[in-house]
Image (tube, rainbow, N blue to C red; front, side):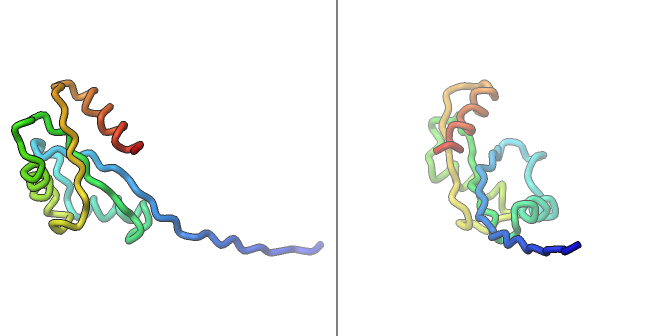
Length: 107
């Protein structure tokens, strides 16, 4: 019986994800340990992510909303290390916020 060995070469693919965050929820802020676990699941340094924040305050300037998200994520991200998506919504329904995030992830 002849055994033929084959070796599969799997090239690393760069994964990306849209990460929904809400600076108004301090209890859900990521910590470094869990963030590193998540990053490792997605290939370590190959993991690309884009934080997305659904903002219901139309009076909040885009730059101010981004600063809020950067401060919220400061335990795990350096300022300016990731492009932040701010999605404005007039709805107070969280289900509509989720829909807005899903829609943004397909762009």
